Amino acid sequence: MNFHANTKDLGNGFRDHGVATPISNHRGTVATVDGEGRPIVLVWLFDIRGANTLLVIDATTGETTEMDVPFPPGGDCPYASLLSSRNRYYTHYNSYFVEFDAESLAFTFHQKTTPQMTMGLTEDDQGIIWSVTYPQSGVVSYNPVSGEFKDYGHVYEQNWRQYPTTLAADETGWLYFGVGTTSSQIISFDRQTGQAKPLLTEEERVSGTGYVYRDQDGKVYGLKSTAGPFVDATGEEDEWFSLYEGERTHVGRIQMQRKRILTGAQGYFHAEFPSGDRIHQCDLVDRKLIIQSTDGTLRELAFDYASEGARIESLAVAPDNTICGGTCFPMRFFSYNSTSDEWINRQSYGQWNTVDRQDERFYVGGYGSGYLLEWNPAQEWIPTEKGETGCNPHYVTECTPDIYRPHCLLAHSDGKTIIMGGTPQYGHTGGGLLICDREAGTASLLEHTEIVQNHSTMSLAPLPGGKLLGGTTTQAASGGEQKAMLAELYILDIATKQVEWHEALLADAEAITDLCVLSNGNICGFADKKLFFVFNPQTREIVHRENVEPNIGQTISQQGPRVFCTGPNGDIYALFARGIAAIEQDTYDIRIIAESPVQITSGGDILDDHIYFASGSRLYSCLLSQ
Image (cartoon, rainbow, N blue to C red; front, side, top):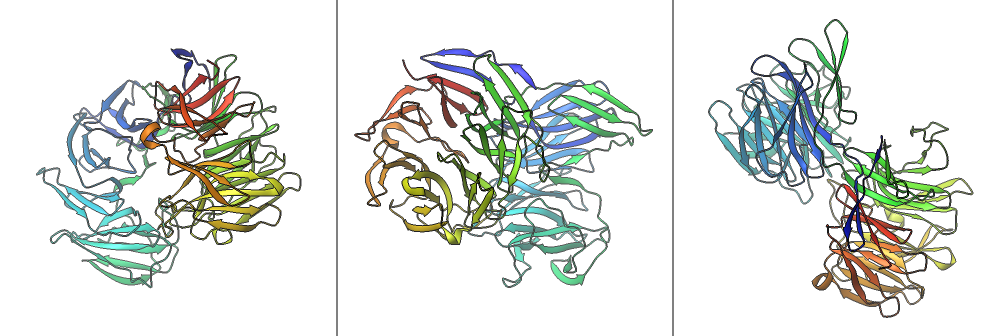
């Protein structure tokens, strides 16, 4: 996808280069019919604003209607959806449960709930709709006949954020849901008393997710699984147990016979119309719908919708002097050419969390699996495939489970070393560190126990003599348990892969947001987006600290932040939510030099005396020499 940017001058040196990925992501798509029996497709559309729209596509003409949700989406979106036996479409996010009637084409019910978003939905034998929510197993029910709505609140709390991704009711009305991911659990819920009971003993729980489904025999079947969230069980395991009237019975292996309930996780796609026709493809990128008739013939329809675009996750200057990076939901690559004012937008391999340049190569640390890509912009783009040669970007390696969500990537100035850190796989605590040597063709992956136990590396800076300074976060993986209290700095020898020193020098800090080398050899950094500090690597002491939040506000914060930008003459800038700041390297003073007309959300690099940054889904720049 190539398109013209039509850059706008905003005054005071700022320019708006437009939306990097002008596409929305589906968070549930179903084929059904309206009240007149016409085939329609319902799509929850998710862009930078959240899932603010339900798109209704006429599967005969391609005409669309965009139905604004009757509550503030708050940047949130569905993680599950359900099409009921009464032809009503349900989801639950930003602490609102909502019903859309496909026959009247209208939102017919919504209700604010205990936080936050559904991870599992089901319809019981009486037609009552149930939802179980992240982060602390909230349960709600809705009777579409009587209109009765019940919010049972959080029914099973842990000291970590739970992913209750499967939900089912047996024929007697008992409810069951599976929880993950720090420690798997299956919960039975008595709707009469509102009481929840865990069915796995503490000894039985494993790192992973509990799984349940409703069978045609009227029972629910459950399994403890080491798999992560949103992964369907196969039925091959021999540890299944039946769930009935709130009790469990071990049954070993089973032959699944699922009751037909039209529900699924965030990417749920129900393709079959009541007529037997099917959605062959519903493409939000090229905006086309392909319907396959019962006789196998295909019919293509064009449709359109409005979108504010996908959130920019990362950006940096590439070797071809373009601004490149990635967006999430959908996961796309973008390249902006400031000379021609043109965009290139392509499907990317996963989510480009953090990016950096080394000589003629551009490196990407991506979610999930914590993969590393190497891209040569001078050569033809050939879509990445894991394990395949000749791709550009080339798939170098992956780091799961030690790194699953990269937060920092350092393309070292030695011209050969690439270092990546981040948080681990779902439910885990403590992230690893990847060290790649381009010349030797080697890759070493250190576990958190070899660096700072129960910490993950959030930021990196090179030190003289082949050393490396790392800054940690105490944040666990999604669905994981935080076990450390204070962020630490550490010094690692790149050659020996040994940590020589580590210490928590910043009281109350939980994350070292970013690091940057000053001209005098000291390292400046930010902790928790507000504490500016300067570290002397020779004495291993903090020589300056200042809470800048009262006067300047907070720095930007992303999965790969890039708060600091260094100019060609060595000047150092920092990106704050409210604007661009310059750092005086002699006095360590920080001052805002340009108030941004938009909130800055992610960074950040310098090209041709312009500093480029993102605000949500849009790319902006600011002229530095004014």
